[in-house]
Length: 132
Image (cartoon, rainbow, N blue to C red):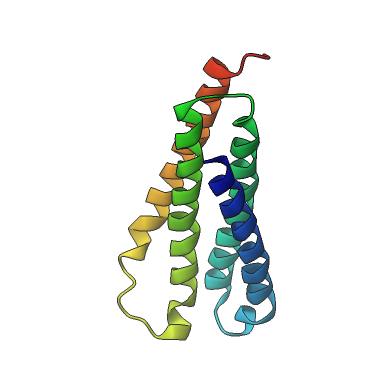
């Protein structure tokens, strides 16, 4: 599981750089300010959760906890839903896609999953980390 989290974090970081560059160099000329701002929010949250997932993977050396593993999965799923839906909503005008209304509710659902991941990380450290 640790290797999966490390691999996902490294790929997510690479894609975060790619998407960030795409947003600042190419996308800014193609979408309005609000869409670009949403795209940048997606990139920012993706990067934050790269480091959260790396933290989970490294803590797995010290904590043997299913809650910690669930936290890592929440970060993966939440990032894909939250950031992914923001990316989709941001570029819908470029792709001229009209059926993106389902993406709106996915963003807060992804955010809630990220919050759950942070809470799970908190409790796994509180109850399972023995060096504290």
